[in-house]
Amino acid sequence: MATDKLFNIVGVSKHPELGYKVRFATDMLRIKNLAKSGHEDIRLAELDTAVSKYEAVKQIQTMAEFADAAAQAAITEYLEDKAPKAPKAAPAPKAKATKAVKAPGVTKKTTKVDAELEDAPF
Image 1 (cartoon, rainbow, N blue to C red):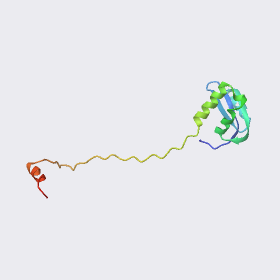
Image 2 (cartoon, rainbow, N blue to C red):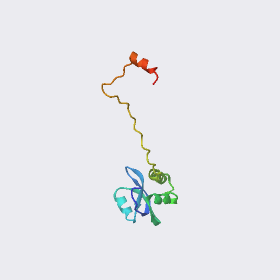
Image 3 (tube, rainbow, N blue to C red):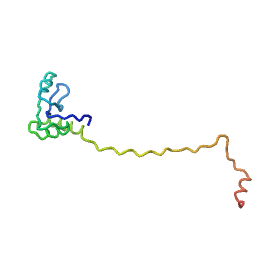
Image 4 (tube, one colour):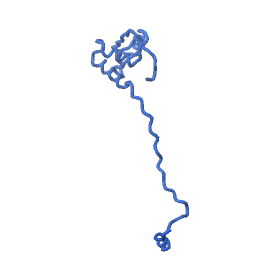
């Protein structure tokens, strides 16, 4: 995650243009700020202990006040977007392809002498 902040208030609100989103706070004054910004249907729940954003959303997912379809859609969207990803394995180094390089000006021509020497013993 991008942050290690802890929150004890979490919920959802409906923005007039953006729809339902998950909201986080450390105190209930957040309701006032959301209302000033034009949010509707503001529902925040206070958790027993401060936890990470992901853990907070997992806790409200099962609460009765967030059981409606709009809240569950916002919660599910957040959990899918922010789900912890498995650590990536270090990529294996790639071998570089090499080209056969000819020395400039050198060409091999087969002559009658070369053909005779191929059959000669060493």
